[in-house]
Amino acid sequence: MAGHEIPEPADRKQVADPLSDLQAAEETCHSCDPAFRHGVVVGFDGSTSSERALAYAIGMARRSGSGLIIVHVANRLPTTVWAGCEPPVFVDVPDHRTEVIGLELACADYLTEVPWILVERGGDICHELEEVGKEYSADAIVVGSTQGIVGRIFGSVAGRLARRAQRPVVVIP
Image 1 (cartoon, helix red, strand yellow):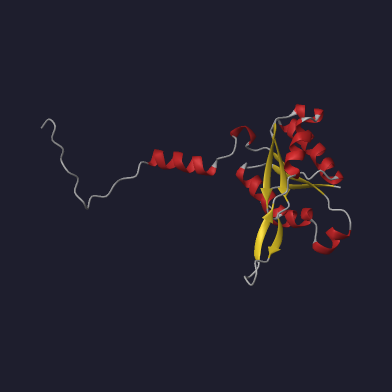
Image 2 (cartoon, helix red, strand yellow; image 1 turned 90 degrees about the vertical axis):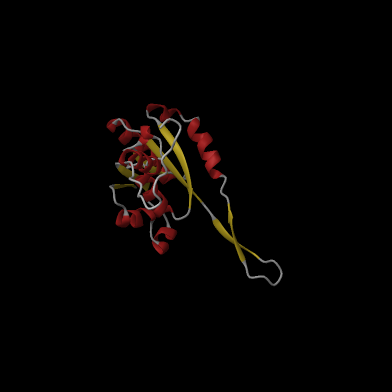
C-alpha cells in the first residue's frame, strides 16, 4: 500500500553489514597517514646518538623507498603539588622541545631525500616507540645507543626495546 509502513517486530534481530564493519575497523586501526605505512620509525631527541640513528634511518628509508616516522617522546615529569592538607596531586609538565626539534628538522637539508613526519608522544620511550611502530606497521625501529652511567644503572632504551619489540630494532652506536 502506498504511504503505509509495516512496523518491524520488536524481537527481530538486525543483521550486521560486513562491509560497513570492515570499513569501521579500518578507520579505527589505520588512523595514521597511509603514505607512511611500512616506514622506518626512528627515536629522536636531539642527542648525538639520536642524530646518528636519524642519519642511518634516512638512508634505510631512502633505500627501501618508504617514509620516515621520527618520534620524539616528550619528558612528562611528574611533579607533586601540595594544596594544604590535601593528598599530593601529580601533574604532567609538558616538554616543549618537540616544537624546537620540529623546526630544526623542517630546516634540515638532509631530510629532503625522504618523506617524513614528526610524531610526539609522552610516556615510556620503549613503549611509545613500539606503539608507533605498531600503528604504522613499521618495517624497523632505529634508535641510538645510550651513553654514560645512566644507561648502565637504569638499563638502556635500546636494550629494553630490543627485548620487547615485535619488529626489528636497529641500534646505532
